[in-house]
Image (cartoon, rainbow, N blue to C red; front, side, top):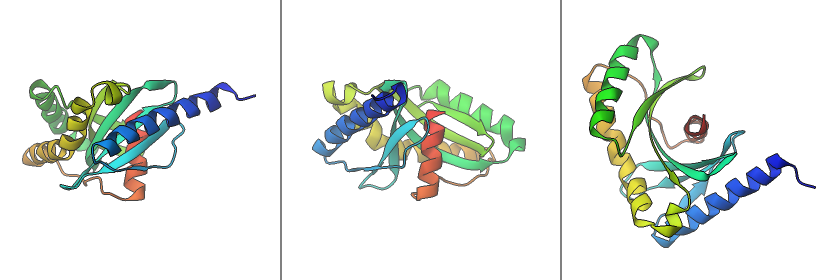
Length: 171
């Protein structure tokens, strides 16, 4: 008899496959990432460059998180510049909210849109637009952070960075 965790993992897998089917129907290929203890995700490598991560969390399988990694390995002495830039960004870009993710593994700035996973199948144009715009938005916030003297590293399309981004997207 399956336990609650097994059931939740199955629900997450089902939601991600439904999202992947909608993405594929719109010409966007998604690739699975390793599972996290918090959920699972897929990465969408976009033809114009860049990528967007879509994740679904355990015990929150009805929600999809579209995440773009802006900057990682941030020094803590940059906190004020980071927070001021992110706050200003959010005042003018509520559709693509950003935040400082401070964790023991290091600090990072992420952009994350949260929507119901069912929106991909009910009204796919909006979430598809968010997915395709995310890399451009990431670059715009990167430029603002650098312009304010913040230094860090970009999230790369590597297994290590994508696994880290998946974990951050759900924590």
